[in-house]
Image (cartoon, rainbow, N blue to C red; front, top):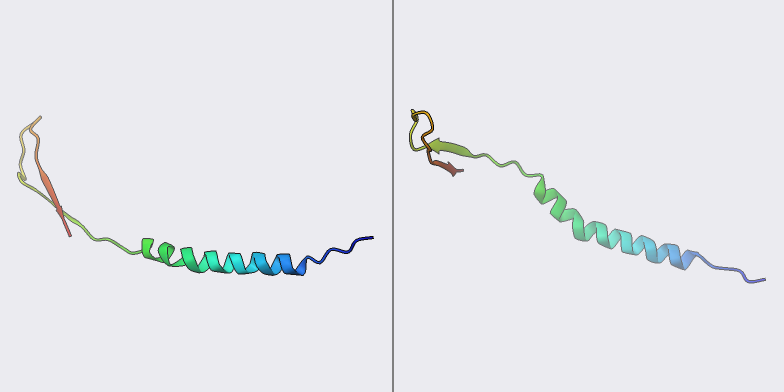
Length: 58
């Protein structure tokens, strides 16, 4: 009868999961930042069917 030792497999899996969590954990936090923007049209009273340009600045 063969006895399997799974402790080394679980240790390797745990180390890999911790490494991936550290590696990708920083990028998730960077995506959670708030962004504030302001849009200013070049014409505040356009005619019907007239196109306007809007500059977006921060």
